[in-house]
Image 1 (cartoon, helix red, strand yellow):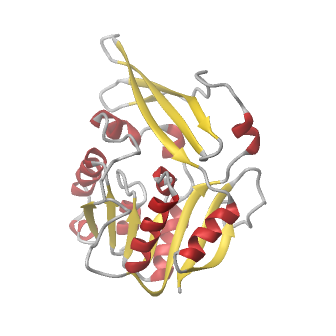
Image 2 (cartoon, one colour):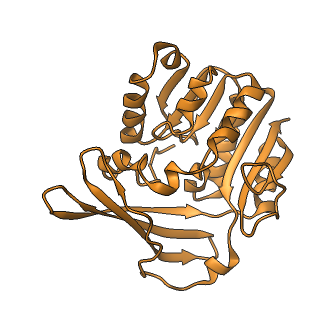
Image 3 (tube, helix red, strand yellow):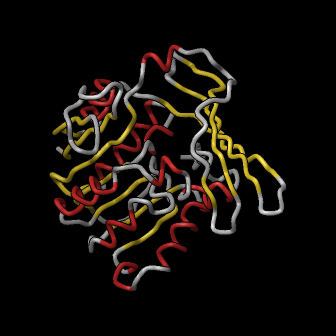
Length: 267
């Protein structure tokens, strides 16, 4: 299978350097949820789309063995640099692999597989999704658990046709070298039949000497509705355990639109 990185994080290595400073990522409240799940599983854990280690490193700090895979070399390099700053006992708990979540073989089994923060939604076809879930199943111990973390589609948002309009300015953040950044985004196109959205994240940088630059992070995502996701899991040999609306385990439907967090076990 061709290993094409559809997340856009290999288009410019600087995007990986910005990732940990983006305010909505930095303040995302999912870390405790994943640490609890990792502890409950007993480990080892496999994280698909581990990126810069936002989830992976706290799990390793909690003393749980974890392997992270990602298809972006810049993101994995950023994660490796962060790991090297950790104590030896933390480094010993973490392993990183450059791998395509649709087609990989790590030669071992895990008690928990996770897909934090939308990584599964960079798979744009049902065949890719099923190939990924099959790989997950093959890497899980019998009775092992999978957490599929995707966003719950907002019908109101999907119905908007503000294509190309720059929206949603976020709080400014700064990098260690003093560079300031404001991030915005725009939707270029939605294919309602294929459930695809073309997105651009715009990073407007102001350097310490006053010069300015814009970095563009372009990618496509496929949204999934609740019962579509449940049927995918069933087709791939998983039994659904729970569906949550947030990382505090409130039932699906508690928030609008909320999250779509599915917990399933390998049949």
